[in-house]
Length: 442
Image (tube, rainbow, N blue to C red; front, side, top):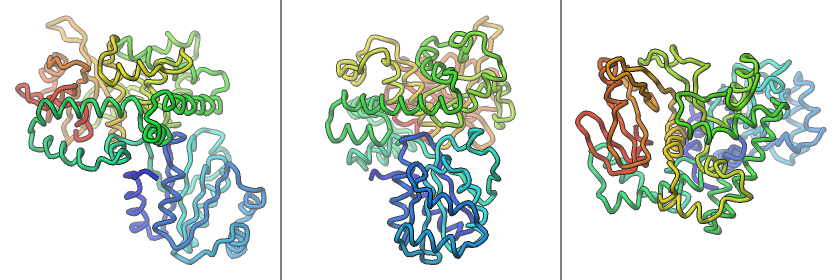
């Protein structure tokens, strides 16, 4: 198993909760939820039971029909799984719990009993059919799991020194040097191409073959298409997803749904987009109509940009019209020599990095009267009751007109301005120019 940061959060939950709550790990399919749950059980408990609701027997499911006699319930679990349950030292995992909502509802009674700990994993756990007619337990805490971030990717490749090094440079505002910066940028582009889906990372490490990695990613994209059909049989969610690269390539101020779907009713479309966001397969950045420390209070749910949850999947989605993404394309992307303007690819990578770091995504567009020009700030972060605007560039050019105009408009609200780009760390007056591999520290 790859080392994942969420493992430490599970350990923290076990210590703090002491059986008073269950923990739900939610995330898109194939991000590693089941794997980390079982590893946690193996190393932190004396015994565990994993109930996989995608394959478990009817006999197990029938136990959840009547939760009035928990002694009988636990006795049957031990017999069916041939595992001894040890009070306060056993973890019971409900894997893919969205497939059997009755088990999720049972959490209330099981946690109240306090004999054992409970961990749930699921995707699409919030869509209507998966919560219909059940009482969502208040004893359930939720934690989101995302694809492997850049540091986790480096760990997987055996590198545990790079991140602490660049963190020190970032905190000291010290450039890493031209030669090291080139290497770090190439390593980060490799991460962008492979992505953070554990299967794809494993395939890359084992084979060093981009074609095989690409096939893994295409299989995952096919699974996501299946997931979309579960809440949208019409296929509109799939069309919206497939159009993400084209929409970002337009460099428009919002995702233009009318350019993808014709004659779709606003309410129905809003529901589909909400379900896509809940599936964790996409990341949505909403427009903040009045950018300040309380960004969520002014988010405009009808004006947004959409990104793919994993930049590696995004790369494959870009070339979905071909049977496979040829190695030559990967090689050119890796060496930064592909002719197309790939600013939107870098933007997706930043969106993924900021989300993995615990940030909700927002952006801002505005019209400047003096220049008679529209400007856009790619991302807005909240820090210390102030905001930090972020502009993303795929070139080494340090122009940041949008940031400057934004500062003129909202100077009293701004803590720091960031330009994320593929060059070494530098300061350009009051703007901090940050290489993309340092985005994780913003």
